[in-house]
Length: 187
Image (cartoon, rainbow, N blue to C red; front, side, top):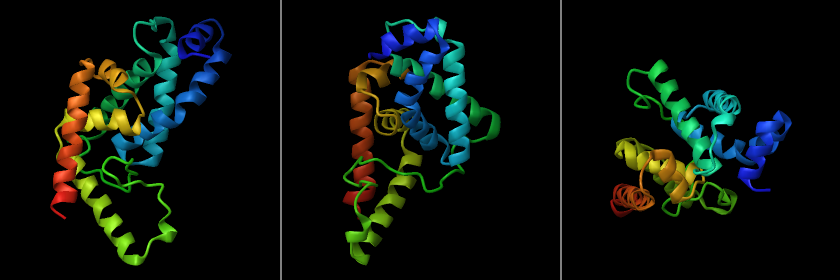
């Protein structure tokens, strides 16, 4: 079933919302985790996002994809969290946040098959990427989060950020290039 069909069904019957929740819960959680770097906070923000989504579902219009609409709610929920809890959002937060395969570093690689030298290189590269993400412009960082952690298409990320899809593609491309320059080319 399409998202639009499920959303229409959920407007009439709250039990139908379950399918939308299961379809997007992991992606919203990964996005919230990328914003907070804390499992408990990401779980809370994911729950708050879906609660806000359910409460405002009657206002959902199909001119945006459901994913874009949902991630706009998640983005606003995370922004509110940072405004409420930190004077400098995300500046002091850097735990072991998983990185998607942005520049060839995949968290799902079989680390048991690596020798200690390869494991050390992967660890150093991952640490560099975490540090470099903090210095990217907020737009580039947000575009990367939506595309890689949230799993949104460029068009959906554009709807969330209220930009053109080509602008999102450029932000992602420049963000990846910045990460490569800082962590791969200089290594």
